[in-house]
Image (cartoon, rainbow, N blue to C red; front, side, top):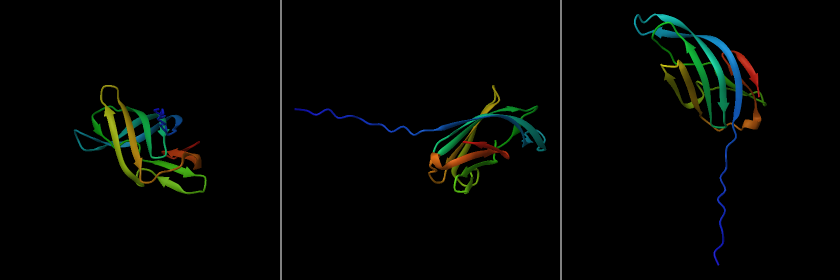
Length: 129
């Protein structure tokens, strides 16, 4: 007699944070090399215990290079603060030139339990979890 085995998959939870805020970031003109201000609208962020993805839309008047939103922190309930741009394993910014949409993706240097997160801070504004 053959026993049926059940496949159990664990799904990691994530937290969606609705941001819907505009910010001004600095970039560099591809033509002149001068610093250029860029309007960015952060729509939302998805946070898991190992990474964060921040969805944003840019408003730019010329071709510029930029690194996306850098001021991203996680505040823990125990008072510890992680500056994700610097305290991370890896980071990437993907950009769609047709839609002016970008995603900043940051892989954490260590696992952060979601239930211990108090807030996420983006460009100086705190969003309680």
